[in-house]
Length: 110
Image (cartoon, rainbow, N blue to C red):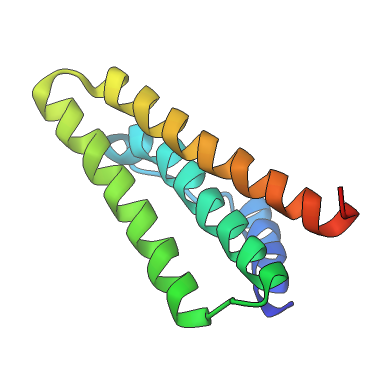
């Protein structure tokens, strides 16, 4: 419940504070958000399965964001940033939908 409250508080603060993202980091923000969502859905699934560990969640959250950003950064340096960005979004999207399906099965017993 603390994570949900923290997420809600972060959204509200971000909405009113209107932070400015440096132009150099703008290509990485969508990938970081998708990676963070993957960690959140994975954490929620683990919570419903009864195996949630806060340390694992924090490490997963941070490592997902950093690794996804590094992959896109490397792709930009190699000149294939768009292709690697698409690959990262597809892989993380599959994981998000897989976790969402598991959450749905757990919640609705279907």
